[in-house]
Length: 124
Length: 124
DNA sequence: ATAATATTGCAACATAATCGCAATAAATTA
DNA sequence: TAATTTATTGCGATTATGTTGCAATATTAT
Ligand SMILES: [Mn+2]
Ligand SMILES: [Mn+2]
Ligand SMILES: [Zn+2]
Ligand SMILES: [Zn+2]
Image (tube, rainbow over all chains, first blue to last red; front, side, top):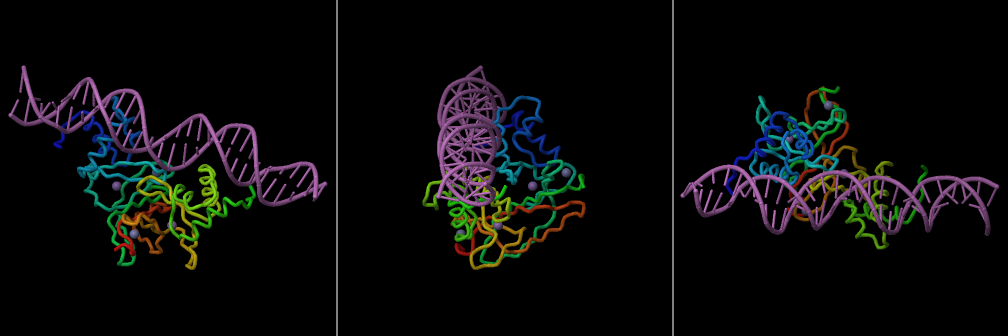
């Protein structure tokens, strides 16, 4: 399964890296000039996730949001990190804050999906 | 909007309080003897959430899960708490563990939706 | 240029959740 | 107890998100 370079892939990745925020398939499609099929966008996004280029967040609305691991001009993002959804500007961003939780040793944590909701630094 | 007591509401609440775990509409419906319409179950669940009796969790599968605030025989659960989804037994439970995160003061956190995934204490 | 196959578009499908509306039933009043 | 009010329910239709099969297309290597 060797990857190939296509305009679609480039366009999707460009949108996500420049915005730095997490976006839904719908939002991504609107940001792209050329017409790309919905199924194709999902397939591109999931492939990027498999390759470790993007990561997927599920918000309280049950929708999938995708974000790049490396924002432009900022440091790379740790695998397990928080996300913040602003109720005002509706953006979802990756936070670099550490998550500390103390749960019984018997539990084995493999993945963390944490979304905080409230007012972001731009809107407060 | 004064609430009325109905067999449906009692049945739904009973299932959730006795199990102590978070359940989806589908799973709840299966646990109830009498036939209850899907839309009705959702309406009952959402009303209970509005009244502060239940709370809603959205897992990585994008589905809604509902859980009681007070398990049987255990202490009441704090409003903001973690959830743990076991990949083996597939149950979603509320954890009493404290969540500590340090984010810039400019952010105003109103709600926390955090689901850990892995192996629970029963399955490890 | 040719061949191999990864990628795409399209339509169909699957599932979760909500909504409008008429029928029903719980609670209140007479 | 009987009548009234209206919260609740059932049903069907609808919306929305996301996935899949398959043929057509386009990228990459030979
Ligand atoms: Mn992120
Ligand atoms: Mn909980
Ligand atoms: Zn904001
Ligand atoms: Zn388990």
